[in-house]
Image 1: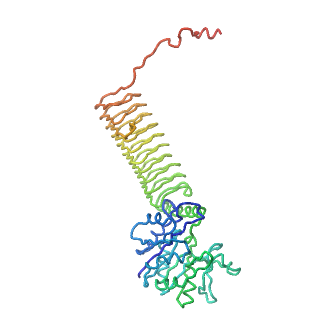
Image 2: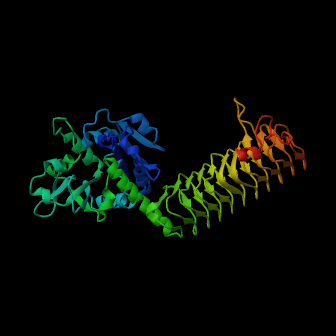
Image 3: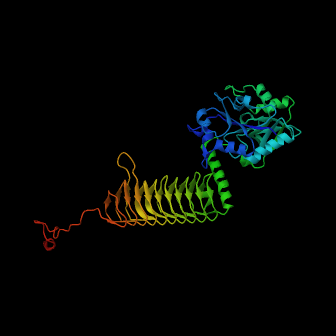
Length: 462
């Protein structure tokens, strides 16, 4: 069976109140158009055309793989949009037409529409569903024999048609030759001179073509997005689908309705997610890890049996049995080994830390190479920026860096060295040495009792 798909993605989406093209708005980290394209590909359709219009170049830049793009320079209706792809459509192909803002139309639905059209040798098939409140949708009008007669848009329905609950989903399957014939017969229907694809159904019926309707039982699947409220509704539905998938595979969520996981994240069994956890991008969370509330993990790999407490981790890798937080921040290119501890108010950026190293509180680790079994005391600062460039600090295995130490990069603290608290280190420290770089303490006795000041006894008498 020769299959093709035409995806309509030309509209601006005025009701979205956004400069971004409507089809590029995201659900769980993925654009609506990308969902539609992936669903088409999962239905084993390789020949795909996308009709773009508003900010055409921006939309085209998101297309991945062998996809034909056609530009609708003027948005003159859905029929006019399909006309732009007429050269793509083969006469002997079955062509599914669907909207780029309907991301829930999955591969199963697309395959069923194709099979229904192909097996029945239909010239056109309309996918419909039944809604308790059909307001806003085009109605499927049937004749006395139950056959489709036409599709009537909401603004054109009469009082009798208003009660019809079977609606047009916006998904069609045409025999290529029949579709091209219908497109040639379309005429503008209003003052805006728009061409409606729905009119092609009536044109084909008038020409004696075999047109039928396939009813989809799950009405949620056909939902599309026209404004930010509907976008939020679909986001919630998509999030529920994603969460249910991971729950069924052994992930524990204390509050699934308030757990946010991107479409491409991977989570292992026995991971525990507290409420208000956000996992974005291509993140991987391995088995046995616990992530507490108000944590954000983005494009990062978290090892097995880690504890992540109310922290932000971006583009980083965390080894097994690590403890992060509370209130820690791992910035991009941070790589932590096993059993590493990054405590409260510690920031790590573009740095590596070896196994069993720890920084428990109030520390900045930037552009650093920290070895194994290193202890960084409270208030340690890796001073990496000299005003022009970021420089690297190396702290080798088994080092101890005391509290309130400044390490002025570039500098190397060699294996087993100790840095005294309060030091500012500007030169390399040799193995197993103790570096002290601070002013010697001076105590001035009776300094408080300076000439001219009353003693404590005199103050009490006053």
